[in-house]
Amino acid sequence: MRFPLPTPVAQALSQLEACGHEAYLVGGCVRDDVLGIQPREYDICTSATPSQVHACFKSEQVLDTGLRHGTVTLRLAHMPLEITTFRLDGSYSDGRRPDSVSFRATLLEDLKRRDFTVNAMAWSQKSGLVDPFHGLEACQRLLLIAVGDPQQRFQEDALRILRALRFAAVLGFDIDPETYQAMLNERSRLALISRERVAGELNRLLLGDWVVETLRTYPRIFWTALPQLESMQHCPQRSKFHVYDVWEHTLQCIGYTPRDLAVRWAALFHDSGKPATASYDSDGTTHFRGHQHVSVRLTTTCMEELRQPRRLTETVRTLVLHHDARIGADNLQKWVSLLGIGLFKQLMHLRRADQMAHAPYVSRHANKSLDLIKAAEALVQSGACLSLKDLKVDGNSLLSLGFPKGKLIGQTLLELLDSVLTGQIANEPSALKALAQMKLAAAKRIEKP
Image (cartoon, rainbow, N blue to C red; front, top):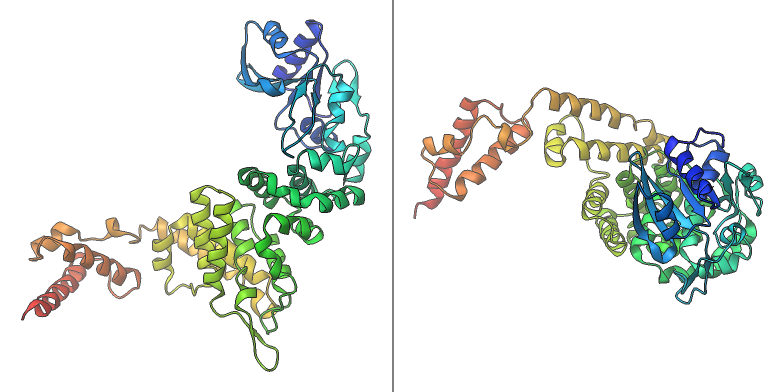
């Protein structure tokens, strides 16, 4: 291994071998080590059955976290380690999980059932690297190749189709042509996969450093998971503001975003409503009036179908809704009040990315969004009035002015806050009370018969 093994990992391997069992690191940790990436977690496969693992670590905590698949979790020095018995999978009648699992397998048989050659390598302290399917060569070529028959691999578990995209986006791999053709042939089987599992792969894919290249190269697979977005391809944007069609503009936009999941989802959806709202002048100029609201509806539908967390969905919806709202120094305080500083910063990052993906006529102004982030942070640090609790008057103050108890107090406080946020008055007690008295007098005049 290129990177030093954490002490608990080395200890677990040694103890299993001392108990007479084979023990290997397997899968992602071996692949990452080969690629020069520090592994974040370590999985162990072994000839020991779960009961034998328990016996081997009598004085340690061993949890039965996946006995059906031969997996237990060992905790050593507060580090969780998944240990799985060599296994052979039976048939996959539902295209998602094996109907049966046999634990009378060798290491070679265990590796043979895995998805891609880069994930079918093992390593032990005794034997070093075990690489029966040439995963090392695939890592060196940055090429994703299915183990054995690619058609069979994707028929066994269709989620592997999206895993291939995720590995391409995260690791910068190309997909072997034969493997990719099998992905295309079997992509309809993604309908068998739970939406939560699909969402998990898409979330990780969108955070990849090579996400733009992956979506540009393999869009047909991606659109199988999110068919609502396919119409963006070849949807023209003929105006002085744009140089790309809607799909390429979207990819460019994603490429300019930070590695923030909500911002990247918002970048993906922000113009998704354009194909449905496109109209054309006689000279071919394109317009997309009202596309923001259609984009929000598509966002909501897709995120809910994927059963994404409510908070993520709401954040993405808000970003999509306001991605091209007019925001500047003159209304900055109101927007920070409306969104909060965190969501405001996410919106500014989305707006900058969106503008960078426009024609130079627009993109040269993109960094103004970063200036607005600095101004918003300074606004918050200055203690500026951003919410009702920041107002220099409250409900008791209005009661002392003769306001009756009831809705008028709350309504007036909101109007006072809006006046402060829009710069109409200063957040000072005297100014606020004077305006409140005017509103009370107006309310009384309305009430008179």
